[in-house]
Image 1 (tube, rainbow over the protein chains, first blue to last red):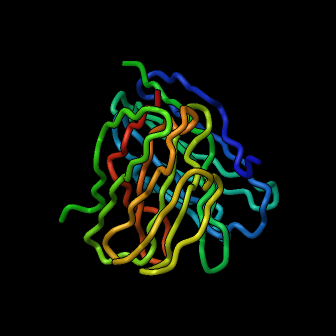
Image 2 (tube, rainbow over the protein chains, first blue to last red; image 1 turned 90 degrees about the vertical axis):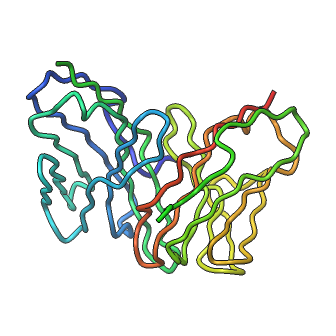
Length: 113
Length: 112
């Protein structure tokens, strides 16, 4: 049962372009939405995160856009660089005492020079 | 400051063998968790712990056991390995009210 749907599965972007990865969720109890970046052979690394009471959060070239009514959120990577080539995962944290994370299926991003 | 340390990095097991994946963190985090990562399926939660002596099941717990005798360590035990447990395993830790910000380097397990 996939509670967080992520698309696309893979993405090729030219250097300097904008990379956009989308996620949709079903459970309105989710209270925190992080994005992770993973390089081959490494563990995921927390990249940026947003709470549902905020519509946008920007950190450097990375921006999360959040649409609470549509239950969708997306990651935008501006001025994409070859060093951004990695797998990106969205996630949603359940509310309550345990705050378990549910991950999307991942997007493999390749930025061509 | 080591963060989250997982051992071993690679392991090959025969069907039916048992083994323990080790995970240790030095940040005094209350919450620790184990995930498995399979192609096209993202990361799925196996077991988690909110503190020493407290563990609970995640999304895919069958075939795995955990214990948490100290804050620092959270080992994952495979009781009788099966080919379906071939995967990459990640351990993570965080403060109880936070989100997974610290992952280990992973253990690539192959069961033949």
